[in-house]
Length: 207
Image 1 (cartoon, rainbow, N blue to C red):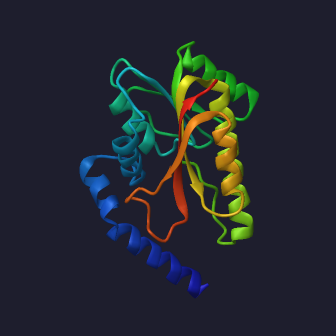
Image 2 (image 1 turned 180 degrees about the vertical axis):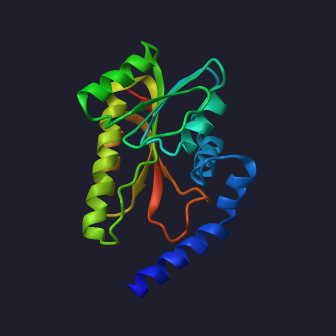
């Protein structure tokens, strides 16, 4: 038990000392993950004013917050999570599991017939610390997000998702390339160096 307490204390100290956590607090962002998306935007121009974006696994809302700023007043952001998310200006939130028909229909209703230009996901499973368990869980979430993107994206749209390097990684990239003209991976500076997380950026959906 003492070991677990010590580990938790170390994590809390690392979190408090993290420059991106401190920057998010200063700049009014909901999470350090905001800076990952901002870095991706700087490199890959995922957003433009007036576009429609869907944010899967959105709580606590960092990515939706960035998206709403970048699409502007004439754009639209639809966010969804099984967890509650505090409201954000310019973001319509749908609570529930997006793989369930009822929740999916609510998301479609929120989209309102607009062409969806971007589907994004920063989802990750609750980590157990055992790679044999965590990696399949994380890949499954990516597969679900990719399936959702294929269902709602307009031709020419983009998809961005967190993905962990390991078993199934190469197969997932190949699967994405079957639907998108350009698929690459990014490791934002805001990602902790020891983390195996990278971001898959897929552009020009073939429809």
